Each structure stands twice: as structure tokens, then as C-alpha cells.
Amino acid sequence: MNYTIAVIPGDGIGPEVMEETKKVLEAVGRKFGHQFAFQTVLAGGAAIDAFGECLPQNTIDVAKSADAVLLGAVGGPKWDALPGEQRPEKALLRLRKELGLYANIRPAKVFSDLADASPLRPEIIGKGLDIVIVRELTGGIYFGKRGHVETEFGEAAYDVEQYSVGEIRRISRTAFEMARKRRGIVSSVDKANVLESSRLWRKTVNEVAEDYPDVTLNHFYVDNASMQLIRDPRQFDVILTSNLFGDILSDEASQITGSIGMLPSASLTDGNFGMYEPVHGSAPDIAGTGKANPLATILSAAMMLRYTLNLPEEADAIENAVDRFLAAGFRTADLSGGAPDALSTKETGDRVAAMI
Ligand code: NAD
Ligand code: IPM
Ligand code: MN
Image 1 (cartoon, rainbow, N blue to C red):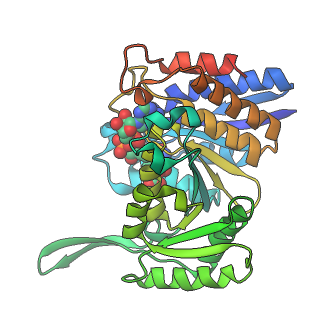
Image 2: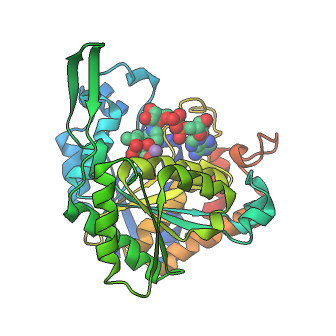
């Protein structure tokens, strides 16, 4: 089969990890007889430098017409002084909104060969810790009203957290459906002891839960949830939460697994369409050094094969190759505490591609 993939390398380490991901997809194509046509387009800082805008219309058009979208990461110090609307990050937010990608799936899994990379004691992570964060991605404070006002204490700025019943219902369904195929537990995370939007969130999640009597639902306040993730991460199966809390908790969860360089994500619509991106950012501190771990993006490509292109064997081939790469003792710098024999971004991509 032929597939068209819109590729948005982005900034910093984005293009570096994307290069290796394409290499691995090409190896999958050779093995299974597929053609992946990569249509590379710009967004973020790269687009600002080339076209003077963070998200050119052509990028949106190419993304919409492709079978799926792969994104590296956007942003960096070079563009940090720009006004909010013009920043590279705005491109990502607009893409998510324009493509209707409201369901962000962020699995945080401890690979058995990486247990030693986790800062948590072995008895806390147990064997094969496996959590999925289901993060609402096109609502909440990221997209609420914002602005500046004058107050008695001087200039003030505000960002509004707002959630509708419809938005909460659809992301809740995503979480409950996912829990059904897993260990059957949904942990909804909010701040309902303080926020009105969280109280509506909790009420609506409870209503949706009535359609899923086979799934166990519990609720956590976000401060407790962030503590419980470290104290006893194994109590979680599917974590259902808002845009902002999901952003924060997924970086926290990544560390339990050893490195944010390992965490993939899928951003999905109601249908099968999706954009796939690592959880991490453009890592300006290591860009250009060959130290970036490309596995998060490579594993995001595996999620793309599974969820959007409906190619489960091909997705397995990537995930198995990563397993064997780790089992063979290969480590990138982030996983080895910077050991001198750590593999570079390119060496990692070469080896994983060869293991397909
Ligand atoms: P970051 O995730 O880029 O980096 C945090 C730390 O993790 C850094 O020390 C970095 O070196 C390390 N790290 C991240 N990915 C790694 C990888 N693949 N391999 C090895 N180490 C890795 O977060 P930040 O520093 O807060 O943000 C940097 C820029 O990225 C900002 O402009 C931010 O807005 C942007 N950002 C973009 C995305 C995205 O495009 N999806 C996500 C997060 C942050
Ligand atoms: C992420 C990132 C983005 C977010 C930023 C870059 C807009 O941190 O994908 O986790 O906050 O959603
Ligand atoms: Mn984030």
C-alpha cells in the first residue's frame, strides 16, 4: 500500500529525531511492501524563519490531506521573545485545533530492560509498569479567553479555564473505551475542590461512567495525583485529565519510565486520523550534539501505524525492534547517565532500522 505522511520536523532536535524515524519507517516499508511518501512541511520556528509565520496555510492543507501527520517538536530560545500569537508553540496549538485532535494519548511504559533507568526503586515500579494518560487537547486554559487588564496592583494578565459538557464527554469516552481494552480502571484527575470547571468535569465523567459499569472509576485531585504517581504508580491504568494537567502529569510520568526521550504520543480525532509526536520538546540544550534520543518519535510512528494506518503487525515490528535494541544493552545518553559509549541519535536510528 501507499501512504502519504505529512512530516513536520520542527525545531531543535525535532529534525534530528525525525530523520531517524523516517529511516525506521522506510525499513518497515521494505519489509512489509509499503511505500511511505513523506511530505515535509514547516511549522514553528522553522516556518517563522522561512515564511515569517509559524503555521503557513500550506502546512495545514498538507496535514489535512495526508493519511497521517508526524511532528518532531517546535520552539526554542530564538523565538521566545515573540508575542504569544506568533510563537512557534502557537503553530502546534492551532494544528491540534484545526485538525480536531481532541484526544491526546500518552502511554508511559517502563520497558523491562530499562527498569534500572527509572529513579524509582524496583519494588515501586514492579514489572512492566504501563499507564496511559488520556489528555484533553483542544480545550481548557490553552484555548480559553486570555488578555491583559489594569488592576490596582498594576497590569494583570489572565487565561481562562473553560470546559463544556460536550468536550468532557467525548474525552471521557476515549478514556473509558481505552480502559475496557486494558485493566479496566479510569482515574480522573481534576481540581474539583477549587475550580468550577473541575466540578463540571467530575460530574460529567460520573455521568459517562454510567455507560461503562465494567470500568472502575476513581477521582483524584491533581496535587494528590502527582504525588501518587511517584508513591505508587502501579495503581493507575488510564489517567483521564484536562489539557493543562495532562501536559504536566505526562512529563512527570515520563521520568518514571527513565527518560522523556522514550515517550510517544498520539493526538486523535473522532475518526482514525491523527498527528503523532513525542511528548518531549525541541531540547535546545542538546540540539546539534547528536545526543537526542529518537525512540520517542520512532515509537510515535509505531502508534501511527497502529491507530491511523491500521497496520498492527508493522507497529509491532517497530516496538519489537526497540525492545531488542534495549535488550541488547544499547543506550542513548539520556538513558545511560551520559556514559561515553552511549549511542548517538543516528546510530540509534540505524540500529533500530536494521532490527526491523
Ligand atoms: P524539552 O522536552 O525540550 O526538554 C526538557 C529536557 O529533556 C532537556 O534537558 C532536554 O535535553 C531533555 N530531552 C527532551 N527530549 C529529549 C530526547 N529526545 N533525548 C534526550 N533528552 C531529551 O522541554 P523544554 O526544555 O521545557 O522546552 C524546550 C522547547 O520545546 C520550548 O520552546 C518548548 O515550548 C518546546 N516544547 C515543544 C513541544 C512540542 O513541540 N511538542 C513539547 C514540549 C516543549
Ligand atoms: C506538549 C507541549 C505543548 C503543550 C506546548 C509546546 C504547546 O508541552 O505537547 O506537551 O503544552 O501541549
Ligand atoms: Mn508538554
